[in-house]
Amino acid sequence: MKLAIRPDVVKLATPILFEQMFVNLLGIVNTIMASRLGKEAVSAIGMVDAINAIIGALISALAIGATVVVAQLTGRGQRETAAHASLQALVAGGLIATGLTVLLVLARAPVLHLLYRGIDPQVMAHMETYLSISALSYPLTALTVIGCGALRGAGETRSTMEVNTLINVLNVILSYVLIYGMHLRTEWMVITIPGFGVAGAGMALTLARASGVLYLFWTVLLRGDFLPDMRLRDFRFDRGLQRAIFAIGIPASIESMIFNGGKLIVQVFIVGMGTVAIAANYIAFSVSNLINIPGAALAVALTTLVGHDAGRADYDAARRSMWHVLKVAWVCMAIIGLVFIPLAPAAVGLYSQDAEVIHVGSLLVRMNCVFLICYPTTFVLPNGLKGSGDARFTVLTTLTGMLLFRLMLGYFLGVTLGYGVVGVWCGVIADWFVRSALYVIRLRGTRWQRQALSIRHKQYN
Image 1 (cartoon, rainbow, N blue to C red):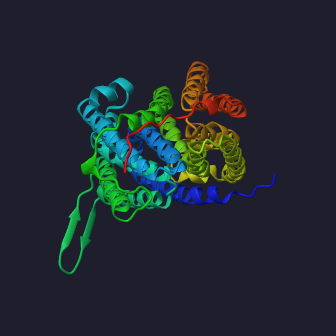
Image 2 (cartoon, rainbow, N blue to C red):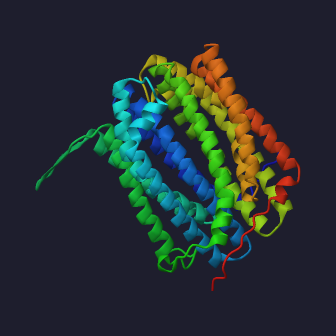
Image 3 (cartoon, rainbow, N blue to C red):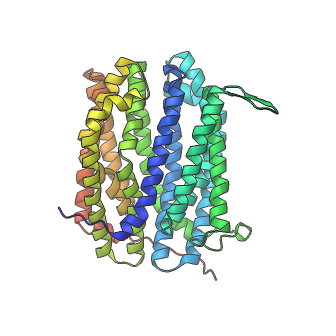
């Protein structure tokens, strides 16, 4: 297969690729540091991060709405309106995230005991501590993720790379200091910072996010020209722009709730399988996130590409963009899968020295590598469909795959038949196959072209 990657794909995807590589590598370092606190601590962080992932996915869904609306307006040449749409999404997302922070901080104990009933008391204590602190980062996450989403929609991916790199570098540095503590003696003074353990991991995340927000707004407001004239003092809610953003954001949020809620339920299945299964599952997902980086970068780029095409009502170009990016993703994922199959034990061994955790985690990572052939059509293609405005179909597809296969089949194989965490992952892989088939059928038809996004807005001078 001849594969000459289009220049516009390279321009959009390359900064996202480096951003995702850096973010995930630093995330792995962060997880390794936390794992040195013991398997109880890393299990607690992993299970709270499943909750944080749901909140993050809801916020990211609104960011997708901002990306699509900004991309389509940019494709039409309406850059001033695109700037106002970005501000509309930022304010709405910030308010929603603040409400979620208040809710989870006040109700953290009931929520955790409801989701993880019967878990080890020491793990539960760590979870309450980590959730109460990490939840403070939700509004900061909303501003960062939605702001970066708007910039990507405008075709600017370099600034988002800078912002996310800054956040993750600071997160690693602060995590080391706040988890383990620091004692620094100089000629003039002695600096001593105590180690806060699991609480330090949450504190580092929140402080790093705050720094990212400051840098993002400096980038956009003071030296950026991709989204001009974003003046908060002139802000008024625009029903037309909000409706367009939420026309994508609400279905994407529902899809994210289904997908991440299903992942959380899978976590609940695994809790009853013991600490080894919990740790192996969490580590395998962390390694898999690293393996999936090129596909994730192409997925983000595809939303912008198709959004620009759809903004011009050029659906033939949108279809060509989706097929082209799929081909690139298939080649990338096949190469990465072949490389990581023999490296799985070494990768898992970076997180844990427990022989049983390494054995189970390596098996899960290899399962992910073998079935990476499904990744482009399961996770990259739906981003292209959303870029065209076809967000509702992805909700129905995710619901079908999640309910019938990831949950029901995974429970049957993993719990009922006793295959454990491996059986649960077989359900996950079945979900990938089903959704891949449904998305390809959708792309080959024309119904996705009829879901054009209606963007009605005030006239801005």
